Image 1 (cartoon, rainbow, N blue to C red):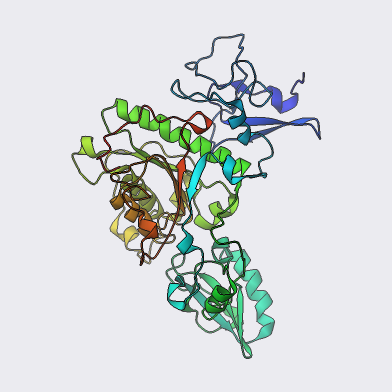
Image 2 (spheres, rainbow, N blue to C red):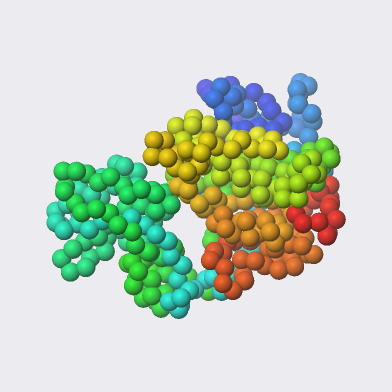
Length: 441
């Protein structure tokens, strides 16, 4: 038995805590970790366990383990409503352990669709590009100064980490500055260096996976070579799986509430990115959740996906000062989102607008209760979403593997990852989210 001293003894109990904790036997200490973004002045709470000596203020939830705690410290691994349960304790073990541990593919709570035709770009016409600002550096002595300046200005972000920063042509070096979508206007360079004006070039959007791809991509710009087996997918850490599990729980919980209100129980959720690098590159430190409002709005286009994309777009159209001040999760949106002023939408020079600084859902993950329809899948493609994870398949209308798979179609200019949450994985069920199979989700 252990007793938490100091700050560890100050946490109050909550059935749905915002702080997790694990035992570190190596240092004989307890590590506390927030499970989501914490609002200013919000109390930090942990879960005391199942055998309480007091009456909890929240509605009692159905827990995953009646006799054995999932983490050995009284719980924290819970399900937020009575519809979810877990019969197999071994399934839950995927969330136990170090956050940086890589989870084997077969142990992931979702199955991923492999877009094999997207793994290699071995012909010139298949190389996907984007526009970036660059500047020529005639004097080699100015290169170090410029590299330091890039870090100081924040332009040196992971967005271009798949490219080499400098391209040498004869006696001239050219340095990458920033993607055009991040900086619609040319970056202002240090005046004391007397450099030529920045200009725009096309560069590859991703690393080179094969030697052939490397040769082709390097004709645009020197590209990083990161070979991997054909069809190999991005690895998931244990901490990221916990993040995904929490996100899917939020989707299911919100979808059930939405259904009780007479709407279709379809919810789309874009959580705050898991890793810090993505938070920095996307400048996104908040979450967005939206439900289907076709019935209440009497509007056939008010799908959950379109509603949440609109939310992210409106947020990114706000002045930077406002977005930085709103570093908290976003509640379920109203039916109609406010339209930003014209000077913000159009990027007036007098405003600090950043509409288009990132292309809507670029580098973000979307969780959704039902497989998106063809219309919504195409909207996600145009929004440049990184990946989606859905719970309920829609074989008659789905655009992510149901009636078709839009990201696999020949000629599309973007592909994104698609995963389907395994049936009842980690206690997450869909039995209260039924909709007619002919309905577009």
